[in-house]
Length: 248
Length: 246
Image 1 (cartoon, helix red, strand yellow):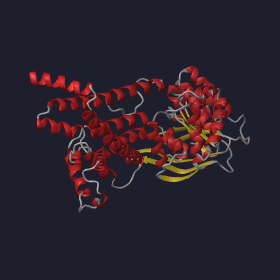
Image 2 (spheres, one colour):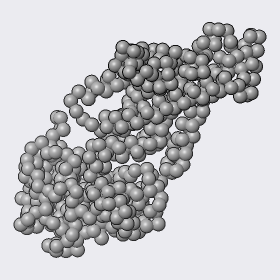
Image 3 (cartoon, each protein chain N blue to C red):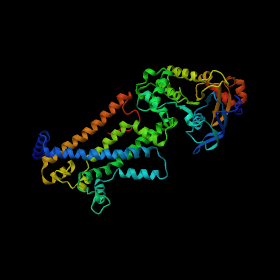
């Protein structure tokens, strides 16, 4: 396993975990996770089902308290999280996004205007007045992305955001994620993105750094080019290499 | 058989001729139960929404008590409210015993557990499914409970209809605290009991028909509400996880 910070130098990490563990009863979901995430990074979390990807995202987001270790992350109001199956209240799409903003203290009138801006950003402005439960999976995920984007987060967490979508919707959501992705490493990007995915092609397209988890442990943490170099990955973590080979 | 036929014919005559005695009783019944449900909703929806998301020591015990209160016999409620409102009782100074207000209070006490328990269950189920996403947006527990209750408003409207059905069809509580005074506290159920014992079957049967129609109307409204909700939300009926009573 590579050491935290190997991938990218992290003088002032946005997120820092030191020996973080999470236990649910008899199940150890995360074990001794130590890593840093620098502002502007685009990080992919990969691993099999139950490897701890979703738990790690929730720990960073503050939805799950670590049972051991230390966590340093921006306050939840500086973050936004996109779930695999986003949910919206039974009201219009615009109002749903506005409610998200209102919950973060934005006055209602401003929230409505910002919600419309966000919908334009994801090319869904024409659906602003549509009731959210009637949206298709792809539209709902894009609306959820708009809701997340409207919050102007420093850190965007995405839990398998395209896993339940058809190929066309997947493509649309991925295109939006790519727009959010900082162009080159080291730039002062406004948004840091951490996403869990089973789709290695998507990881190659969107991530600059890949973290492989297995049974709650980080077994590999490398820049994307090095991660997909089989020889190097095998040297760092044979299980991660086996996972990639099995998937590709 | 002929008694039944004649009584039914006479009852229909009373209903369709808009008999003032019968419809005055019907109007009073609907007013008492409607007001009781409205007041119970103010308490039950808020407490239920809070209980749906709150976690505190003794919550399980509180829920067990609440669920037990769902089966509260109306005569017991009537007795308790009678004791509260009787001259020597803690609320005796109000002078409400054998009044419209006493009946409203009794029915309110009767249906508060119904509204609270069903709201709690509805909100808790919604919280299990969606609470994490609301928490992610920044909603604290109380706000989360209120937003989820609002989101489940169609299901909760059905809860209120169920509560109204329970209130309008009970007889024990209003009999004890209202006294079944003609033209003053006589409601459908107490009138049916009285007229049957007196042998005035047409009036009893006429009131019974109206009562059944009210309950039937409520169920039809719940079903209509479910279909309307499915249509406006663009999803199949019952597919959204919200609890809808029938």
